[in-house]
Structures are given as C-alpha cells and as structure tokens.
Image (cartoon, rainbow, N blue to C red; front, side):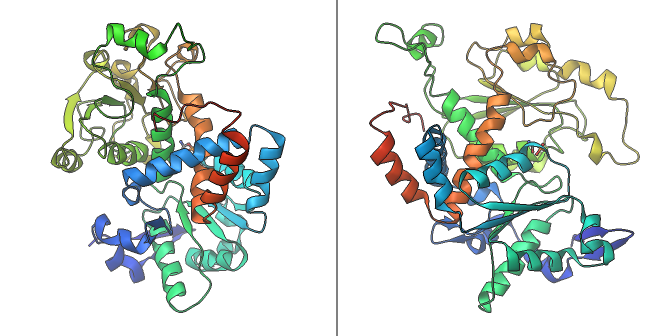
Length: 407
Ligand code: CP
C-alpha cells in the first residue's frame, strides 16, 4: 500500500484515514464524486464523459460570448454574487490560479486565497485537513493545488463524510495536484481543440471557405476531434496535463497518440498507461526524436522537462538531451498547415519565442480558454448552466452567428 503524506514544516503527516479509499481504482471512486450525472467535486478527468464535455464546452462558449458585452457581463456577475471561493494554492501556479480567479469573478463570486501555508495557522501546526474544514465554514467552493498526491481527493472524502452527517460540505476542485492529474487543464485543452478542429476562419465567406481549402491538400481531414493523430512531446512521465488529456481524448473515435520523448524511463509515457489506452482502442506510437514524428501529427502538445520532480540521483544534464525535442522554426514549418501547437505552460527552451508568431501557435489562446472553461465548470457545480443557456438564447443567438457545430 502507498503511504499518503503531506509536508508540514519538518513533519510529515499521514492521510491514513483515507488510504483505503484512495487506493481503489479510479472508476470505483467516481460515483462518490458525481451526483445524478453531475459533478459534485472535480478530481479526475475520468469523471467527464463525452456528453458532459460537450455540454461544458458549450457553456464555456456561451459565457465567452455573453461576457463580450456590458449587459451580458453584468448578467453573469449577478448569477453567483452570493457565493465565495477559497483558492488554496500551496504549490506554485500562474495560469490555473489566475484563470480560476478570473472565472469566479466573471460569475460574481468573491474570492480569497492562501498561497503560502506559512502565512496561515498551518505554521502553528494546524493540519491542512483542519484548514480545509475551516475554509468550508466560510466559503462555498474550495479550489486547490497541492504538492501532496491525493490531497484534493482526501479533502473530497472529508466533505462527503460531513455531508453524510448533515454537516456543511462544499465542492472541492483539483487544480492540479502533484504529478497526478490536472482535469480542468484537460478540459480547456479539449475546448481549444474543438475550436481549432472546427476549421472555421474569420475570412470564411460565401466564396472562400477555410475547411474546403484545407480539404484540397488533406482530403481525409474531418471536422472535430475524431480521426486524428495527437502528438505529445517532452517529459511525458511527470507531466500531469498529458495524462489527463489523453484520458479525455480516448473518448473520441479512431484516434492515435504519438508519444515523443527521450528514450528513458524518466521521460517516456508509462507503459501500463499505454496498455490502458490501447485497451480502449487508441493506437499508440512512440518516437524518440521530434524529427521522426513532426509531419505525422494533427496536433503537437509540447511540454517542458519537469525538473522540480527530479530524484536526487536523476541526470541533470538536460542540455544534450533536449536538443532533439525543441520545436525550432524549421521543425515547426514541417508540421501540417492546420496542426495546432499547444503547451500547458510555463515553457522553457522547448518552444522558442520565434514560434509565437507562427499561425499554428495556440498556447496563448489555450491559456485564455482556461478562463471560459473554468467559469463553465463553476457554473455547472452551482447549477446555473440553464440560466446561462436561456440568457444566451434570449439575448445573444440572434446577434451572433457563432459556429458551435464542431462541439
Ligand atoms: N498550465 C498550468 O497549470 O499552469 P500553471 O502551473 O501556471 O497554473
């Protein structure tokens, strides 16, 4: 059995109480985190099926459009102005923290934050589980990122137990824990891919159509996420975003995944997870240089070497290793014309700044999409999606001819 611990100054405290529940296969736990086909807590990407993903992405798109006008923005602000969120981020973050904050603000939620345990009473020895229970007294949702594997999950069990005894209990959102999972990142990545593989362009007109043009050179190209080869490059063993995204991609039809990493157990996507993907019907390729794979993929998802998870005995000589996995401008030109370049960020040297002006570069748009998707997730947790849909229908659909068909 694994030992689940979290750091508290010099001390290590065990999550013994939750070990047996944490140790179960994910699929066994999911019913405890969902409620009547809805999310109750957000912990794993596997909690979302294709129908839920599509529904959340549609809500995200509606929120994006509604918030583009002042009356729409004011309407969204009114929806959850009676709610408060705690952002408990004791592991570093820029995008996830900021986009959850912005998403909450879009819906009128008031936010508070703890980013350093030493500025809370944990410095005086309070257990993080006690902290979470205290937050649940003051706030209506807890959004958390922790170094400690399974800590968000343990907090969700704590909330479920409180609920059983009719005590106050609030939703827990895993905003990326340790090297485990990053479910909300996976959803924003899917949203970005849906938008990209809708193949619409601002230049589309009755005479010119982007998708029709693409089909001239790529006759087999389909709209949407089915029938694609998804390339993932870099540190695939320790990147939580890759694990969560391939899990969601495996829900789509006729997809292949190309894992591109140094030929080392330290970086390759784990063997047992490859077997699981193959079992679900995904075709998996492995490449040990980016050059070999670059012209074969329909999407390229770059990741950085996650040096912060290095074991003491792990090779630190990355300079030699990484050369094969840098997306140089020359390599980027070999990508298919429509192939989006994604990256969860932060980036290091694997995507040079020159790539930012390449029309395939989607990573800044991807990061902004995080705000819409996280707003949709929060709207779902508080059950205000139908209000958003009704407002959109009443006030927006007649003014905007947005293409939602790819979703
Ligand atoms: N993508 C992502 O999780 O970024 P942050 O670590 O900055 O939140």
